[in-house]
Structure formats: structure tokens, C-alpha cells
Image 1 (spheres, rainbow, N blue to C red):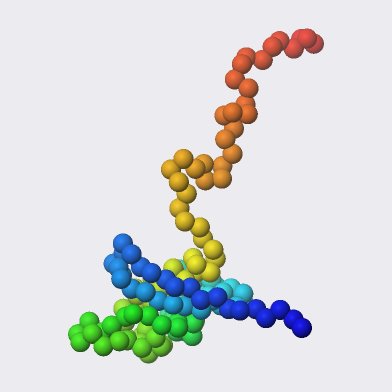
Image 2: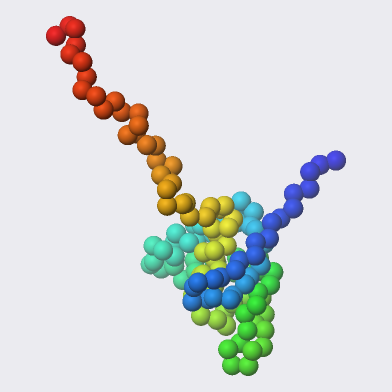
Length: 139
């Protein structure tokens, strides 16, 4: 009897952004898919001829993993389907904001560090002797 791996789902809640109130539940990707998504993100950032295809690939990954969201049509308040067609009917900024938050969630990016944190940098001040060194007996 083996271990059954359960796929994670991330509930992304947007607060304090231009998408304040947007909520989306998105399944995790396999490691291979996550690497493909990252490669597409880098290709999009680099621009050039491959960027349009990379952007579409990213939106397609999101559409395949999007379980639900609370997006509504601005004209009449009807729900926008959590599908590729639903995503394609919106401004690209919406999909890219969800993708960025989703990637952060999958990569396990922690919350911002406190003001007093050194951010992981060692504090050398306490370990460096501050007294003048004694003269060397051999000089």
C-alpha cells in the first residue's frame, strides 16, 4: 500500500490591491508544470517573438488549475466562468495578478520579515573584536 499524494489547493485573497475583494481557489501544479510555468514567465519577461505564446501558456496553466473565483461581469454582475474563456474575457492584468500570487503560494514565499529582522544576514558586529590588537611578540 503506497502513499497517496493529495494535490494542494490555494485560496488567493486579494486585499489592498487594485483587485481588492477578488478571491480565487487554484490547484497546485506538478513540479514539471511549475518549471514550465516559470520558463514561460521568463520568456514573457524577456519579450521578443516568444512572449505572446508564453503569456498564453501561462493563462492556459491558470485556467486548467482554476477551481473557482468570485469574478463577476462589471455590467450586470453575472459570474464569470472559471475557465479559459472566462480568463480570456478579462484584462490581462487580472490573470497575471492571480498567476503571480499563485506562484508565490506554490513556492512557499513567506510573509515579509519584521522590521528588526536581519533578513538572514549574519550580524558580524558582535563577532568582530573591537579592541585594538596587542602587538605581535614576533615583531
